[in-house]
Image 1 (cartoon, rainbow, N blue to C red):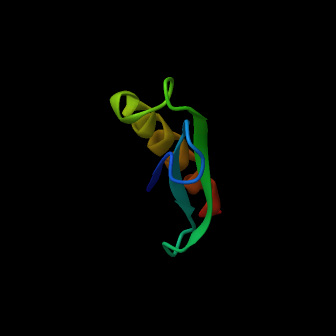
Image 2: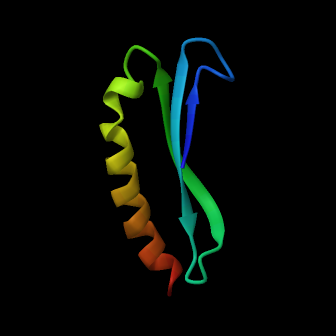
Amino acid sequence: MAIDNQEFEVGQFCLAVPIKDFMGNTVTAISIAGPEFRINNRTIGFLSHLKLIVNKISEYCDL
């Protein structure tokens, strides 16, 4: 998991979660980004949504 709280660009907030294959290797990632006033530490609930999506995608990496 990664959180970018305006480190790359002032006013930008990003959350990212790795997608792993059946061996546990990270093969890619999914992220959401937006202005800090919409996506920030107070709206960290987005992270749980990302994790759910990643779990579904990872199921297909096992095929």
